[in-house]
Amino acid sequence: MGLSLATAERWVERWELQQQRYAVDREERFTVIADVVEHVTAGRTPRPLVVDLGCGPGSLAARLVRRLPDAEVVAVDRDPLLLELGRTHHADAARYVDAEIGTPGWTWTLGLDRPLDAAVSTTALHYLDRDTLLRTYRQLATLLRPGGVLVNGDHLPQDATGPAGIAAHVGRCRSERQRVFAQEDWGSWWAAVADEPELADLLTERRRRVPFLDTGRPADLPLSAHLGLLRQAGFSKAGPVWQYGDSYVVVGVR
Image 1 (cartoon, one colour):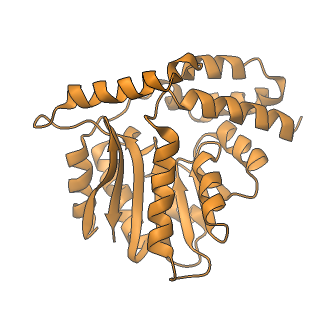
Image 2 (spheres, helix red, strand yellow; image 1 turned 120 degrees about the horizontal axis):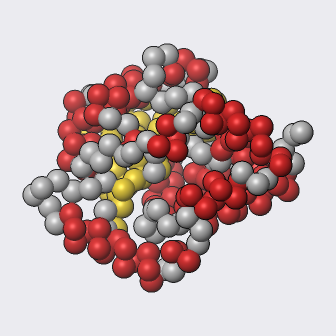
Image 3 (cartoon, helix red, strand yellow; image 1 turned 180 degrees about the vertical axis):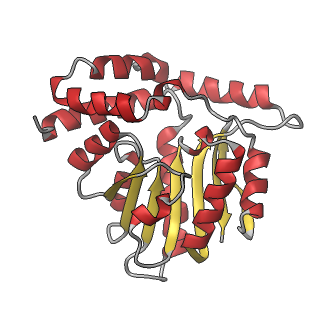
C-alpha cells in the first residue's frame, strides 16, 4: 500500500512538533540557516545548488525553497521512512537521495552536475564520530565552490574552558518558556508510527537497514572540535553565527 499525502502530512506535522523538544528555538535556527544561504548565493547564480545533510522528512529543505524558490536542493538521509514522508509531503522541495553520510562513495549518489553553493544540516551531524566527521567535512570541501558554505545548526557542547552547564540551562529555560516539552517526545512519536498501517512496510525496512538510528548516541564533540575539523578539512573560515544556550548555527567558508 502506498503512502497517501494525507497520512504523510499528518505524520510530518507531528514530527515538527516533537522536534521542537530537541532544538532550542528551532524555527529561528532554520531562519538563520536560510539567511546565510541567501546571503552567500545572492547575485551569484540564478539556481543555487544546496545539499541538505540528514534531511529527515524535509523540514529544512521545505523552508529553504520557500525563501529561495529557484534553489535546487538535494536532500540526503539514510532513514527510508523519513525520506518517504519527505518525498510525499514535501515533494517539490528537494530531490531526495537515500545514502549514509560519511560512508565510502556516498557523495557520488548525490548526482551533482556542478559545484555546491551550500551544504546545510540541522540536528544530524552530531551523531558522526571525529574521524567520520573530518572525512565528511573534507568531502564537502571538495564539492563546494570557492566561497561556498557549510551551515550546520545543531546542539554542540562547549569544551572544558566554557560554561557548558550554564549554556545548557539557558537553552532549557528558553524551551520551557516556549512550552515545547508539552509535545510528544522522540520515543512516543516512533511508538505511534508503529500503529500506522500505511507506514508498516517502511518501518520494517527502517528496522532492517538502520537499527543504529534507535540505539546510536551522539558523539558529543564540542564546538571547538567542529571548528578545528572544519579548518583541517580545508575551510578557510569557521565560526558560529548564532547561538542560544548550546544550540548553534556554525558556518564554514570554503
